[in-house]
Each structure stands twice: as structure tokens, then as C-alpha cells.
Length: 147
Image (tube, rainbow, N blue to C red):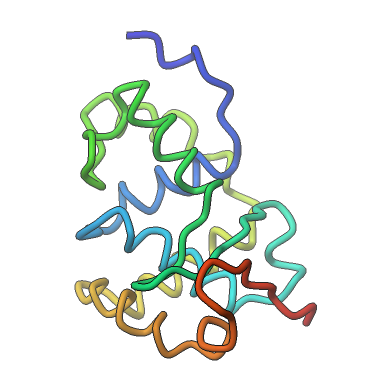
């Protein structure tokens, strides 16, 4: 296995950090969680990590986040079709974790995930009632206000 065959971004490191720290039940929960994190942060915190989210029937979808997940699965860092790191994925994350040291959005995500603790399934429920989610039509891009 060659974990260095891809170019990794802060998005990759953030997803690895979330998966190494918390137990997500489904891949869709990661999309919804990152949407709630982006929606509850100000524009200054989102500078290093930028994702576009689109409204779906049961939550949001981000092509950037899905691309990151696909990259991690292709490189055997993530169990296919499940939000669980492999042994190699966990080891690789520990090697590159320091890249997020000064990233404010990563810290915001960790604080938000700690509020959910073991109830990350609530993320899928709460996204349905978020004002930004509710005001958009299905299939449309959700735009965040510049706070």
C-alpha cells in the first residue's frame, strides 16, 4: 500500500480527525455534521476549509466531502461504505494530525462533536430543521451568510 499516492488536503485531514475521534453511524452523517459545523461558524473560521452543500431529501450532500471519502477508501485508509478508519488510516492520521494545529474550523468541529457526544445520530435529525436547509429547494446549493 502506498498512502502517499494521493495529494491530501486539509479536508482529508479533517475527515480523518473526525473519524479517528468519533463514531459516525453513516457516511451521510459526516456530510450533515460538516454542514451544521459550517453553518454554526463564522466566515473567518471557514477560511481554510471550504465545502459546498446541496439540499437533498434526507439531508445535505457535499461533492467535496464525498470526494475526500472516496479518496480515503481508494487508498485503504477507510473501510469501504462505512465511516470507520482502517489500521493504516489511523496510523496515517497520527502522522499528519499536527497539520490541523492552527486550523480554527477543525477546533470548532471538535467542540460541536463533543456537544453531540455519543448521539451523533441527532445530526441527521437536526439538519432537517436548520433554517438554511429549510429555505432552499431540494437539489439547490445552500449558501452561508457572511457573518
